[in-house]
Image 1 (cartoon, rainbow, N blue to C red):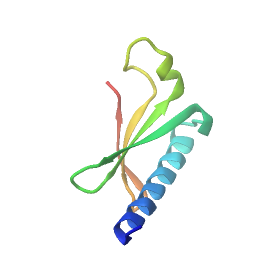
Image 2: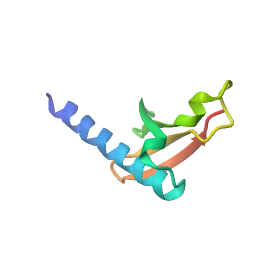
Image 3: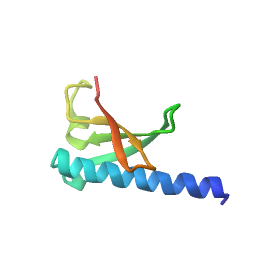
Image 4: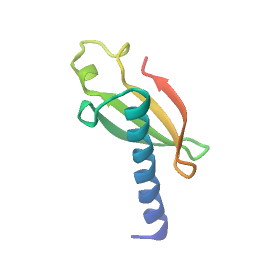
Length: 86
């Protein structure tokens, strides 16, 4: 594994840890109520993580659920932006 790969893995782990903490504190979600999907990075280098609330997957039409898209600065370990699914 190259240094770049190691750094990206570490940043991914940090971004997911930030997401888990945010969802527990801000939304009071239990860890077994959602799953996380890494969806790449923005042009600014922010990690994009989808937090999929599992009950939302049972709904017949997308949107209007609890799931969110998080833009995370892995270096500063903070949520920069939270977007609701449409």
